[in-house]
Amino acid sequence: MRIAVLGSGLMGRGAAFDLVRSPQVEEVLLVDNRRGQAQDLAEWLKSPKVKPVMADAESSEEMVGLLRDCDAAISCLPYRFNLMVAKYAIQARTNLCDLGGNIEVVKGELALSAEAKKAGVTIVPDCGLAPGMVSILVALGMERLKEVAEVHIRVGGLPQNPLPPLNYMLSFAVSGLINEYIEPCLVLRDGQLIQVAPLTEVEEINFPPPWGRLEAFQTSGGTSTLPFTYQGRIRKLDYKTIRYPGHCQIMKAMTDLGLASSEPVIVDGREVIPRDLLETLLFSHLPTSGPDVVLLRVTLQGKGKKLSYEMVDLFDPQTGLSAMMRTTAFSASIVAQMLGSGRINQMGVLPQELSVPPEEFCQELGRMGIRVEERWDS
Image 1: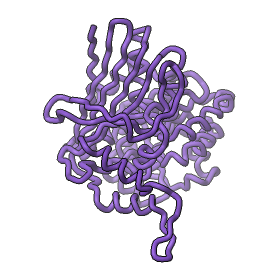
Image 2 (image 1 turned 30 degrees about the vertical axis):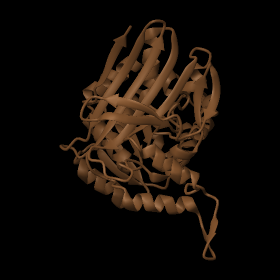
Image 3 (image 1 turned 180 degrees about the vertical axis):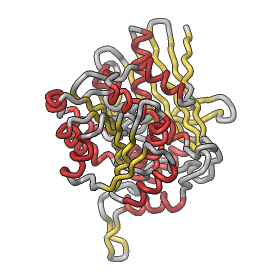
Image 4 (image 1 turned 45 degrees about the horizontal axis):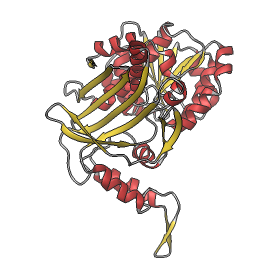
C-alpha cells in the first residue's frame, strides 16, 4: 500500500510516524512545498519506506500526478486546501481523508460525492480527533444502544503543567483555535438544528486525578456532520471543549472586546486588524511544546441506559509525539489505511460516522496504545 501525507507539519509528522510502523504500508510519500521540511521529517523517521517529495498544493498538475500512483492520501494541510485537494483526488482516482476543521469546507466536499462515486474513489473528511474520532465513537454508541435520546461530546487538549493566565498551550494552529472561539456552534436541541454562541454554557466536568475539576464550554466545529446525520434520531446533541477553570471567562472577555474581529480599526492613524494582533500575541506568549494531555468523554443516553467512552492520552516522551498529535494524526492514519486496503469500500464523499467501521477503528487505536474505555450505567 502506498500512502501520501500532504503536509509535513506536526500532524503530518504524527501520521507518517504511524504509517511507517504499519506492515501494510510499503511506501509513504511526504509531500510539502518546502523540500527541507519534508526531508527533515524523513530523516527523523529513519525508514526506507519514506520518500520526501516537493510539490505545490495549488498546482493541479503536480498534485494529481503525485496522487495518481497512491492507494490513499491524508491531507494534513490547513483546512482551506481540503476542497481543492478533494478535487485532485477525484481526478487522480485516489482515496482521501483529511483532518477537516471547517463545516463549510466539508459541505463543499460532500457536494462532490457524485463525482467521487463516478471516479470510483472514497473521500472521508474531518478525520482527526474532534471532529473525527469522536464521531466514530458516537456511531459505535449508536450501534450499541439502538435508541438514543442525547449525545454529549467533551474533548480538550491541555498542558500537563499549565501556566497562567490562560493555562493553555498551542497544540494546533492559533487561527483554528480562534475560529473555534468565535464561530457559531451547531447543535441539536429538541431534535432541531440550531446554532448557539461559542464560549457559552460553561459547565463543570471532572476527570480522575491528577486532572480533577475542569470546565467545558461551547466551541464550533466539533459536531461536524453529526447533527445532520442524526437529526430525527437524537433529541439533543452537543460538543464542548475542555479547559482548566477560568479559561473561558478570559477568552470571552477578549472576544467581547472585539480582539478576535477581522474588521480593521484605526490606532494612531494606522489600520490594525484586531484578530491579527491577537493571533500574534497568543503565538508569542503561549507555549507550543511540552507534555500535554488529551481528555475525551462521549456520553450517549438511551432509554434507562447510559453509555460513555472515555480517554486520557498523554505526551509520549519516547517518541516526542504530543497527545494531540497522537490522537489526531493516528486517527487519520487508521482511516487512510482502511481506505487504501479497501476496508472502507463505499464510493463517494462520506461522513466518518457513516463510513468508518467503528469496532475496527477502536481496535486499531488500541494497537497504537490509545485506550478508549467503554462504560455502561443504568
